[in-house]
Image (cartoon, rainbow, N blue to C red; front, side, top):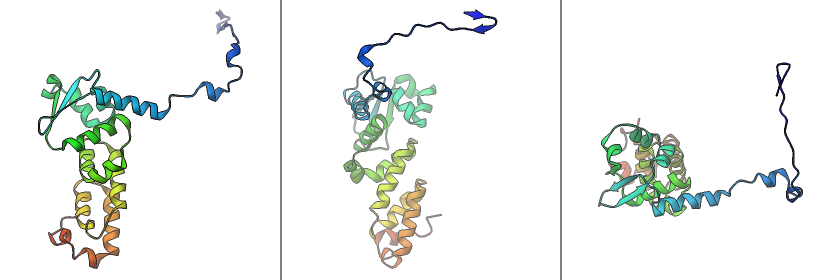
Length: 200
């Protein structure tokens, strides 16, 4: 009601006995994170309600959802917002990402997580893919993993990879590692193929 130019709200409060023993935090609990992750993983795996197909080299097709890809990747969002062939045909051809790497990337897009086994096997390729599709957190995760597994044999080639794909954290770690182990790194194949001069 409006009384003397003031808004007055009248309401009724009903006490529900079944909730009297619950605390506020207990009544406001959200869905467990692992439940959400599982739900989205299943959505990706069974392709329900998909509205676009990713066609990979070799002919394999992956049914996915524009809304989810667009929410997670600015690159996919720009693609689907434009009036390009991919949008009109609801078919995107992925020619520069291997199917196993793309499947790992999609699971990350849908669930926000990645298995350590996938990182160990595909970290370099996932770093490249995450740079292309603007998945910054996945890229950082790959950088941290590669930084933690640097060795005399891999330092030079990993530095080249980091420089090519603007992986600043990984690049800094590689350079520190090489400075500390210069004499040994300089005897490796990666160093001898002409890495010096390629890094800015």
